[in-house]
Length: 96
Image 1: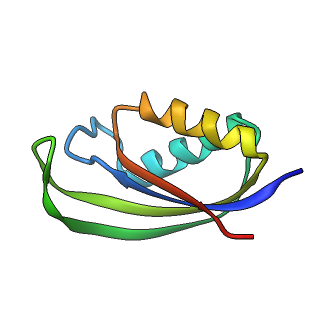
Image 2: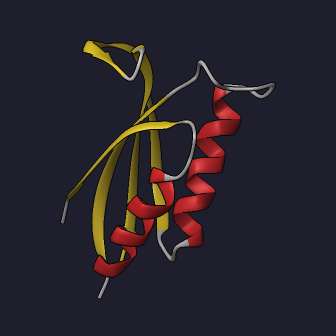
């Protein structure tokens, strides 16, 4: 049984080498899909300041990912993106 989720991910673009932000957003989407999810919509919210500096970073590029996945796939997605060097923060909640 699959459920719909929203994932808010803050990307660290300071360590972005060579490519642009759109390529990074697409690569994160492919990593989510590689864990069995189906990405339905991607909404880029842009660069926003953090309330306080975390891990020597003052701002991040926020992206909303709307996807459908099984509940066990969500934990695999979180674990996989935790290892990604450009993912600074990630938060998920169930939409439907």
